[in-house]
Length: 601
Image 1 (cartoon, rainbow, N blue to C red):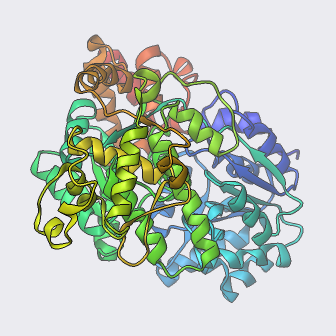
Image 2: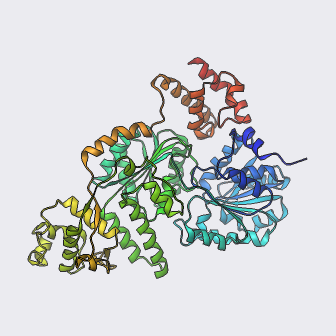
């Protein structure tokens, strides 16, 4: 019997008319027994690249997934499509484990999800050597890289798959990997002979916006209330305390927000993650401990109220918004203290110098994105080796920032750092520039230095912006022991008048107000007022079906599929079958129920 056709499977089971991007090439390559390294942005359809080959090949695909908590929902999603899949992890009883192993050995399973720790045990290795393995899929493959942002030592052991199962095809997948990380994935997973499939990193449905911090929690609240009232979102913070304080602040202001960080008990983390996945309108406030492998497609915004450590981390985190392809926002507030704190963390860390240098370069790239006056999307894509035209959809494209000749201001700031001994933080330097006789200024006799008061012509906010951009531009650095500001070699020609510097101007309040009106409509799902009642009825039906099965609502149908129903208003099952995301199994299970809702409108 010939293997099923890939396009037929895509249409009949998954409900999509055509493959996207390089999906068809990847599926064909892996289904025919080839190894592959796949770089595809979050929401780009990576899972189809191994799920369809798993259905085409004899045996069961073993999927390495780093997070136990998400396996159940991934498997339930496949069950909704009529695919026999299972997971093995520490939450199962012995009887449940044996049942999964029996199904694997019998050949009835098509996909089996396991954590890397379990895969490497002698018991599981023996199981795979005796059973019908069709392929290995290594998800979140960047975890194998010590240079990456999510390094997990247990991933290094996955090189054993090539050694023990040389004839079984392997597909390694990740959403973000620079050249250094990509090279390490190839080396550590022995993928030197694998075909590399690098898709465009562009996520055109995400609008990138970066603002200067001015009471970040209040700015965040305004952003959510103005543009995402009732929407699902993720807010990333750098510290555990900031996570808890921010979640409480949002709750106090009427937003259903939950905290997530490694300091919480495993029960609390699991409970909060389940609520986020299965309820509507939840905002998860988290450290970077949250999010890897999150498949929730209707996250409408990702916000950062602290500067991320790297552009890879930022891009992967923001990529959790809008996986369904509908308009979404990536919003970041950052300030001078963020820059200094991250630089101090690098310098005071225990990493070897070579790794610190990599971390410095990654932070510099992130600062470059934050301070650029060019298109944000162009800057991001350029980092990943991709060229593009200005997007017309980020904050810089919609409201081009002004620049100014800051040479004189920069020289004043650098001179003040030098005159005060190159060991004080930004706050103290600004006090000296503004001529403030604080106890600290007087104690160190800095009211007697030549730079005392020479910056009175500019407000404090402007000086913070100048110092932040001088740090970002490499004219200043933080000294390791106490985090004070120091001049770099780049500062000296600027001080000597041998070069000039243009800096990004402060945002204008009137421009910010103008943007508010624009961004609300751009980030919405464009539901016509006349269709709002029907939209809510479709969502209510989805929620009722999901609650009855104790599964996330998006596993029934995504927002994108509901929106397609709303726009097309199919009148028959035959018409419903042409809606993107409605495969044969879901049509049979849910088609009539949603037609009833549409007919009742």
